[in-house]
Image 1 (cartoon, rainbow, N blue to C red):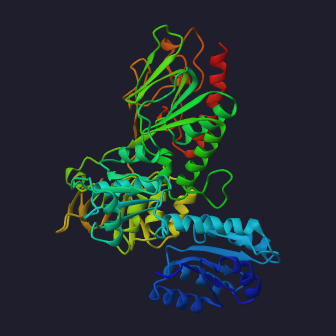
Image 2: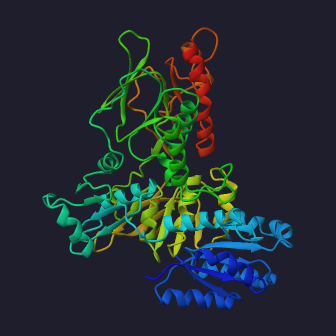
Length: 553
């Protein structure tokens, strides 16, 4: 396959854009065209030549009808490509108003002011972000940090790929008889016929039995957690709330340890693109946001232990602090933040549970979406995560159907996502519907689903090669002691939600405090939380003042 292409459509400023994009010509095939017909023909020619189109750059100085045709035509020609509209300085203010809805609805990925001269790094920073996201979600990696060798891409292999995508680790899957497979197996013979075999650029190689085993290898899980002092704060869970708490606590000089069972970023790390997070006008993927936050926390001194889930909390024998237990050792701490988040509820249809990993996926499973090019896909769920998963899948799949029990999405999904879904011709919404059955094809991969109208019970069988289940929150806090009170659904009670008979005196606990002094809860695990990335981040940051107050006592 040849170098990925950047196609620039401009009739009046071709020289300016040619000069600006000259810096990309070493690694991208930069093509210049004048109109919509030429852009479509160029995209088709590139496809026949084995090139992928990474980015369409469209000059706004076209006739309005032609411009709209250009935008729609590029999406139809190459749905996986990013689309950037550039406006000359003389038109930028007017275009900003005209294209505001188009950007919000995802018709274009960004609107930028045309470069005003050399080294316009604000412009190139935005272009770099678009290309970065394309490379992370669409392109095959040029350098594979992790190689998975297996004769069959089974459910475990797909779980490993999904995990690697969540942590931003480029990976590839190879058959043992391939050139890469033979090269890896020559250095890793002692797998005893167990698949998959995983090889890393870091130098380790061997059979990988689970995602947790892979996490241990990637992050160098120690034989024992070597925290030999009483720390100020242990954060359990490295989702948005846990990462924010880690950054702010360690930046203020609090000794901080963060425990994460699997992937840094938690459920938010599966989001292909978060467009409404403060400070990222062009959006950011959950994976990028999580990895940047982890880097910040490390810089300030947070110690991360990945692959060791917390198994319990108990008071120290003398009662002056808490002990967080893991299978790798205990951590003694003055305060604890429970930020383990939630998992997706199970569908409860036995025939589909048997197909998990073979067309049926819990969560967004971004890596799996690439394998469904040209297929029909169903997404079950009405929250923002389901909307983001549907939009990402629509870059590859022929059709995407969102199935929800409610009549529509308005009560559960952000408006900007609803607008983007309504505009996208590949996505449809079936309200008042649920999935009740499904089955495989001759090779054991999902082939069909039965959909039921929740009002009258009518059923319809539809073809589907992919089913993504994002069914709502199931709290992950069974490891907590009974003294940490929870609501009827299992979420941790905090602040004024705690019954008055559990208050100390007549004053309710602080907003994020639990029924156990010195233990706090934040993010999706907390009863009454908003289940949004920004609100979880805010709660994680705000916990630091409560920790300071507790330590001062």
